[in-house]
Image 1 (cartoon, rainbow, N blue to C red):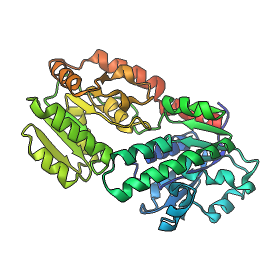
Image 2 (image 1 turned 180 degrees about the horizontal axis):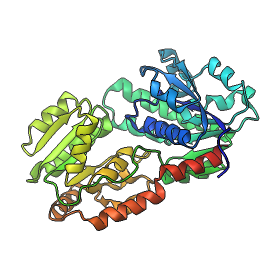
Image 3 (image 1 turned 60 degrees about the vertical axis):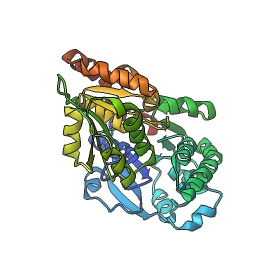
Length: 375
């Protein structure tokens, strides 16, 4: 690989990527960390709307700039999607115009820069975190509140129309193989680089555990719908403990779980508590009803937990199918849980995981590919 000592990159993030505690910013933060370790001088630009400036970013980047995201309701009435329209900054453009370094845009959220003629001739790449209009359509279907439902449907339509702006990018870097297949049908120069993540080696305990674990942000409709399904349709007649762990569980979920003696709730666990729950579980179960984006919690399970039981939507182009047990309905999930309960997780399975994850999800290898593409 070429000497990176004098290489600079502008990276424009849709949010402040610290703390790295949800899907999109996990990829951004650990990408920054990997770039820093390779000696790349990153000029980080963050849209700020709730998260505070973070000192750790200063240690990883050549410079860090923050811009207020305008979250006022006026953007709801524009033809441009809200997630794009609310992220616009003349100050950011002026910073980019100070040099001719390549630019990496994180998500369609920041893609309005592709339309600024002052940046014509600059090498601009876009990291696609999702097929955004599909994601918002799924959010709309899962949402019960009328206004939010309307907003998600409306935003999905705008995002589908706006997506064509990506033609102006030099290249797209998809986060999953499913996304790469989609974007390759509509755009040129599409590559696949998996999500960057915090895991360096497997921390799996061989043997057996005595419970099944589901974890996720429980305030998100997709996740509390998954818990409702597991509790009401899978564990309703299983004599096997299910632990549900996650952030901010709503009252209706707390009340539902209280009805089942074999199901317990661990609200707002610390990172260490969650790690222990994952590693001590016999089975980590994760189901989703929307096959969008890469579910980074899947990597968390595979690096730290024993058996990983999922439905096919959870895999969503991750290329990790061979490391998971797949079941797509309640009867199949029950059958697999009963079967796996009798098995022990051994060193051979750990080694197989280590080899597969090392090939595809090694941050060091993937950052070298990214640097070659972007610079």
